[in-house]
Length: 313
Image (cartoon, rainbow, N blue to C red):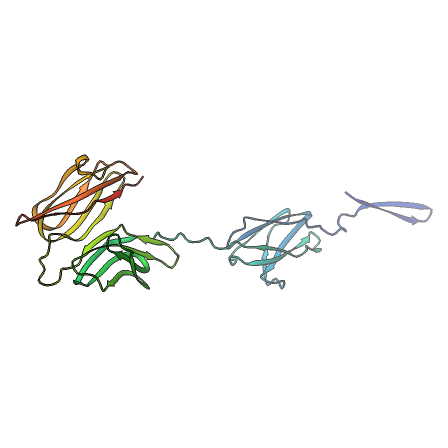
């Protein structure tokens, strides 16, 4: 502890007076540390070389409009600043008073609060599978639903032909796209896609539809909607399609596209238009091939081209 020596002369005697100067020295504020800095709050720690009671003056400008006080007298100080604005620069200084009410203040410091964390965006998903409805031999509508507003796009075309695109930039959860100038009696393949305002894309598997034949031409037994993969898991999948008239159906499927290396699976032994089949015991991350066979009440038969799907991990 520092001391000061004082000499007083009293008559023929000298009086030595020794007293402490610590009470005369101004308290010193050490460099503060900003800790626990977040979007809306921060804590400031510092030390003083003497017992002091302190407060922090702070604000978004050097005017320091706000104040946060501590109640205790101590060497070790910590104050919490709450209700701050995210991603904002703040100014602050420390003001301390020793036991004799002598005032000391620090230099002006700054800190910058963190931005608000980005909210976790829900993944854009197609919640209702695309459905094709043929309005005429030259028109069809494609409909589907998404779990949040998004744009609508359909890419479609004939086999081995350059695809066309129809789209609507209006964001919605119910999507309806009209396809026009189609050719009668032709099978069109299509895929739907949607994009939300965050840039996320969702797209369907490829499916197909058959436009009606022109009047006077006999309609062939065929699939008019689908086939679509309605459910795809690691070891199972469900395939759905619709025919233009009631018929029985089965498929040949396997890991190679040749029927001689595939298994037969009965889809329906009844005369129906809406067909559904589930394939199970599949291997993960594996591509499978299948072909659908149809037979109507009059004995007319038809078959599709080879389709494929790939199981997930």
